[in-house]
Every structure is written in structure tokens, then in C-alpha cells.
Image (cartoon, rainbow, N blue to C red; front, top):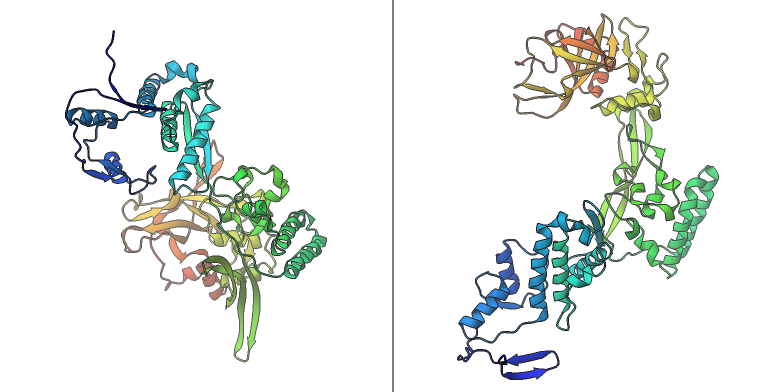
Length: 533
């Protein structure tokens, strides 16, 4: 019959007994802070830790702590404490290793899917250990719903000795075991701690009345979304702030994800910026979808919203002459005051954009076409914004048409691509041209073409990319059969750099009263496409 150990103490849930007849060591072992010891063991800083900062563990070798505990107890004659959690967690880790070593062979025993499923968990915060406990618990539940019955309960510790920390640890063991079947995705859901709303109830009711009034101007499609917002704001200042409404201001949890706005903030904008012109002329697509049916894919990127600035031109008349100004007003920035962030409103006066003023003048001239319909056209790759503005005013035409120096601005669809050839080709080492080509957008007398290119000079202190405008006589080389695209070339030695940027080109045209200023023998090109300047 097997000899039984002598029992020292026994109670519900615990038994202690004698093992070896040795002198008990009662010396206190040196200790370290557990978090610091764990950081050293992992070789990385900890973002969160299960135990508080004052919790201590003994200094030890860095081997498996169960092995180390038994080794020190044995070699130094110290009592040992074991729990179901310590033994099962060790076994479970071995089980996890076996699953990972035979993942595909065992797949059908654990899951019913191929590949890896994404198990998504969302959280507003993960600064405290309790936050991570909650996150890991959510992953554990998602695993339970995606593995065969009883697998979850097999893996997770749920003994009488199991603490919250231990249970979380056992859930992580399970996550490790099934990592070849699942991807664990954590989405950080941000939030606003608290909000202050100023203004009286009368103020907010006034806004509601104004919203009702603008509905009469063919804006019912917008105001039907604004009125519920107004009602919630009225309830808020009346002392009844609806929590769900305010939690849905930016990114509701139900449709949270990506760098997009899915909350009711998006409903405040009836128009978003056009992808080409960047002007707010496109109806906000989020308003076409009932709010209850919105998904993350319906969200609006902040980058497509208007700037929050309004502008109005002013004609200044003084005894000394006339000038053109522009008053700008709206949202000038975000201010932090008394711990709160709020958008600041202001205004300014500046000189009017001369290029836009010039375009406004040109579009009144005979010989120019109607503006382009951007819904049916796209800009050229690397197209200067000023040419987008030009075609938004008029899609080509002839200026100074009645003079000896007509300038034929092409319609966007008539732009052509021009390669460069000559003794300085290739340009490697001294110049870099985006796409290795220029784009022709204007024709002048003498069968010459004016083209733009995005260029930077490499053998100079200034290596910034710039829009270079050149003039030259292009040569037709043929058509690319597959794409039907015409190929034109410029000879490097025959072209001149006549402006740095589209605004400068048109300023010089206006100053020269339409003459081909670059044909003047005294004209100095702004740069050169040759190796030496």
C-alpha cells in the first residue's frame, strides 16, 4: 500500500503536508518589482500589466517560473504552493504548442472555416489593466462562438482558485492556441469625455426656425436631417441631453472604423469638395442614406469637407486709384480654453488672388468656351491646380484673338503628351521630370506649343519640385497602337523655359499685352533643360 504524506493542515480548498525531512529555510529571498522583472524578461517596455506597480517577485534565473519555484523550494528547503491554475496553465500551453505545430491537421477538430477569420474587438480606452481584461474577454467570447462546442471551456481556467488575472491569462493561452485560425483585431474607439453647450433654449429654437425657413429653397433633402439635430440640441440646453445623440456626434460605436465621419456631424455639410476642383459642388452622399442604415463604408473623410471659410470680392476705389480686395471669414482655427476645445470664428481682408481675377476677366471675353463639366471629365495626372481653375472658368478658347499674337488655350480633352529628346537626354544626374514628359495645353503662331512639366534640378541647392512652362515646336512621332495616344517630342535645344508656374505665365502674358514676350532677344529663360545653366 502506498505511503501517505503526513497532513499538516486541511480545509475546504486547501491541504498542506510533509514531503521531505529537511530543515526549513526561513530566510527572505531578495525581490524585484514584478513589472520591471517582466520587462527585462520580455526585452520590451510594457503598455499594460496585470499587477500593480508595487507587486514584487523574487529574483530568479528567468527560467519557467513553475520550474524555478519547484527548483528553489527543493534546493533551498522551502515550502511550495501549487494551484489548479498553475498546473492547468502549463498543460494548456503545451496543448497550444501542439495545436500550432499541427494547425492544418487539427483544423477540422476545432473550427469549421478555412484560412483565418478576423475577430474584431472595439474599445474606447486601453490605458488600465481592467481595459485589457475587458478586451481579452471579448476575444475569448468571439473564439467561443467560432470553435467547436466545449473547446472554450476546455481551455479557460475556471477553478475555485481562479482569479480575474488568471482567467485572463488562460484566455490568452487559448488565443495563442488558435492564432493560425484567427486574426485578433483591436479597434480603438475614441470618445469625448464631456461636452459643454452654451446658448439659451431660445437661441437653439431660433436655429431650428431658420433651418425650417431654408427648406423652402429646395433644401428639404438636407433640412430633414438637420431638424432632428436641432431638436436634440434644444433638449440638451433644456436639461435633457440625450446620451446616444452625443455619443453619435462623430463615430458611433456601431459604425466605427477608419478615418471617416459616420456621426451626425457629417449631416451639417450639404456639399463636399469635388475630387478635381476641390470646390464644394458635390452633394454629400451620406445624406442619401437613412441614418439607421449607414455603415462604415458610407462615412465621409474630413479631407473632402469644405474649409469653413467664406470669401467675397471687394472693389476698392480711392483717390489714388482702384484695387481688388477680398474679405475672408469663418472658422480660423481651434482654440483650447479652460480645458475645452472649440472652433474659433474670425475674419480677415486680403488682396484678391490676381490669377483668379485674371480668369474672371478672360471668361467674359469673346472666343472662350463654356466651363468644363467636371462630372464628365478628369484632370490630367500631376495637373497644376491653376489649370483646373482655368477650365472651371472656361474650357479653352483664344485670347488676344484679334492681335498678331493669338494664344489658343486647348480644351482639356485636347491636351497632348510630349517627350524630350536631344543631346542632354537622359537627364539623370542633373534634372528630374515627373513622368519624363511635358503636357501641351496651349498653341501659338509658328506651329509652337506651350507645355507644362513637374521638374526639379538635382545639381542645385534648391531641389524642390516646380511647375516649369516651356515653349517649343513639337514633332509628331506617331500613335501608340494599343492606347491610341499620340506621341510628340520636343528637341531639348529648341525649347525655352518661359515661366515657373501657370500664374507667372499669365502675368507675363498680361504684362506684355499679349505679345510673345519670350521672343524678345533680351528675354532670359527662367531655367534650362541642359546640364549647365
